Image (cartoon, rainbow, N blue to C red; front, side, top):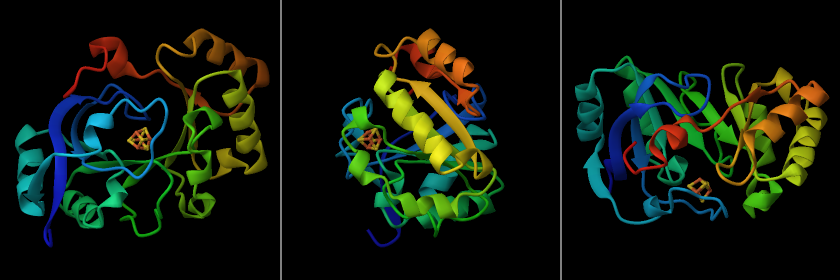
Amino acid sequence: MSDGLQISEIFLSLQGESRTVGCPTVFVRLTGCPLRCRYCDTAYAFTGGTPLTLDAIVDQVKAYGVPHVCVTGGEPLAQPNSLSLLTALCDGGHQVSLETSGALDIAPVDPRVVKVMDIKTPSSGEIHSNRWKNLDHLAPDDQVKFVLCNRDDYLWSSGIVRTHDLARRAEILFSPVHGRLPPRDLAEWILADRLPVRFQIQLHKWLWNDARGR
Ligand code: SF4
């Protein structure tokens, strides 16, 4: 597709994660991801979807009438035209965030976009995919997200936070995998260590139990 993207779904929901948690947000989910995280909850977006032009996507987003837009996946940056989409959404006056795995280069992303970038933990099975150079392209408004399955993930992640002085580069989010790590355990570990991170739970899973399109 020269002028378009393969789209898995576009829908309105409440933002379930990140700094804008709870805000009505239009989600644009792009098809495809080169990673295979063990806890992935959007495997349905690995394939399929519908080809749409940039204009058609922007029009659909605009029709929902809310300022927040989240471009997600899959891995949105796996489709090169995602960069043009992000810019077009910013040009349209939206507050745009990008959810990305951290495996692909974030340097070319429009600086108006808030990047919410994963650092893959050991339990994901994708630790080798972390593109550490991306840390140099984070802006203070960006967010770095660790998804944690157990105590070993926590110890590894807190070590990364300290080693890379991450709190000075961006906001840091620690999120337990729903049904795997009791949220209270993670909350108590963070407090015990006075770790400079924001604890979060995946709101949409508590509200809608991960139903598609929510
Ligand atoms: S990067 Fe995201 S979409 Fe891709 S496999 Fe991992 S959790 Fe799933």
